[in-house]
Image (cartoon, rainbow, N blue to C red; front, side):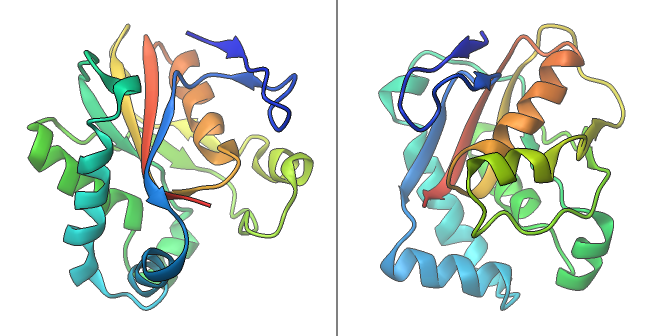
Length: 180
């Protein structure tokens, strides 16, 4: 279900995602915890942050949706080695245990892009051009739940959804811990 969204921030942008649902705002304590999880390597925070995403599943925009699998947003291999884990993959595991769904790592980040923080929408788009590709196989018509820690403009999630849709997914929705 691709479409053209009409909000001023997204005007004219092609969207491959049906919806992005954050657990909460990226501010205060949540911001501090996400940063400790991601940059401070505090993996004990996976459970409470994952639980914020579980709470987001009750959002009316996801009502009645059934997913076939959960897909974490990948890190480039260099960044994953530096960080020693992919925070989105850990969060996806937490969500998968709640939903009793498989996690499929069918996306690969092919470029070591600069961090999106601080870029405006046009720079975010340029930064992510060709940054993702499919590894493995996507089941034709699958309904996928894409997972990441934080969304700001949705550019990263949408770039992943585009690749998933082109590979045959029927629908891609996204859930994140927080929205910046």
